[in-house]
Amino acid sequence: MPVEKSAGAIIFFRQPDKIEYLLIQNSSNKTWVFPKGLIEKGEDVKQAALRETQEETGLKDLRLIDGFKETIRYFMKVKYDYQIKEHGLKLGQIVLKFVTYFLAESFSKEVKLSFEHDDFGWFSFEEAAEKLKKTRSNLDVLRKADDYLRIMG
Image (cartoon, rainbow, N blue to C red; front, side):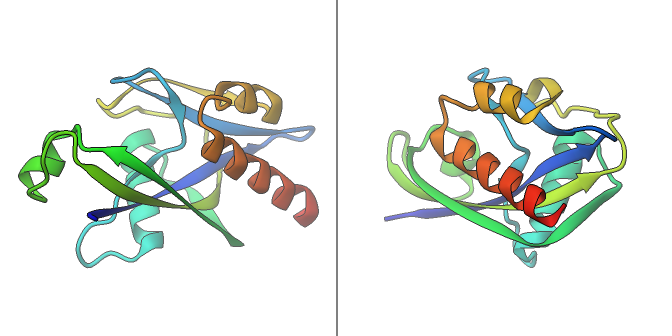
């Protein structure tokens, strides 16, 4: 079975009295997600996560939080041109997808979206959880990130 690996980040901004999480909305299916993308040749997972986050959000001043790394996996059908052209897959073929997320603090809220996304928002945990409720794996990662930040203080 073909495998695809991506990396991304749960971005947060610390306010004096609360933490806000960045979500971006996919142009294609209008779902809210964390920034992520394919790991390129020669990159390690952290490098890919930072590059993809910067490409999709324009955020450059990020600090990865030590000790947090979550990998989710799911099956998806091939539907993108890059999967067909670059990997020789067939439309509708099943692929096992792995996405590794890191936790990253942003020191700016000035987001500049890529062409792949229509909208973004900085949300409280509760608001972000509501937007992610259709993608259980992303919701689980958000919960783990929020728990980790509460423990770390």
